[in-house]
Length: 197
Image 1 (cartoon, helix red, strand yellow):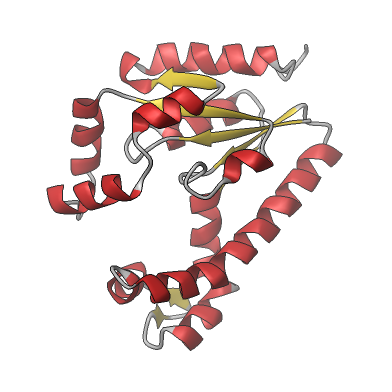
Image 2: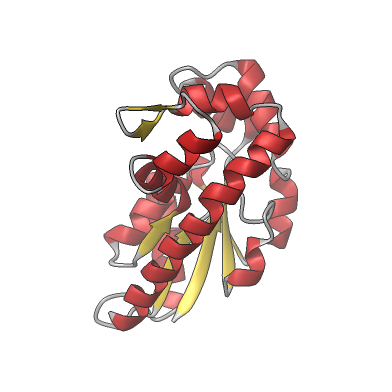
């Protein structure tokens, strides 16, 4: 089974691209979705113990937690020490299930793949990209997003140009959904993972 890492900077179209792989029957594991599940489950008591008052009704309040860790390196490191091992555990179980199910290709959607050295844990990397003006418009359309927040997030991520030069595959999501779908299909075919092939 080939493990494909899917990554890209904020607003580049990772979630939409991941859904295209799923539509072709490729198993996909999303790190962000795993964190959401963990914040409503196993991670909640651990987060509350370290950051009292950040859990409401058994679920981590992301805004309250964000306010506690933003700009505090030690707090962020403590949070990562809680969450990352749990996400890795979920990812391991996902890959085991994909292998057991006979999948030829599995996708790991990892927003900070290069920033966390994740390229060493996958067989190939797909970077999604888009022109800067498309990226900016997408991100600023999100609820609660400000230009300042967007710039801060961008500053914390590896530049898009560098990600593209390091990638095995690049899809420009700014070219539209049909072009992206065709590119995804080409990658799936290349790994012999289309149903019936």
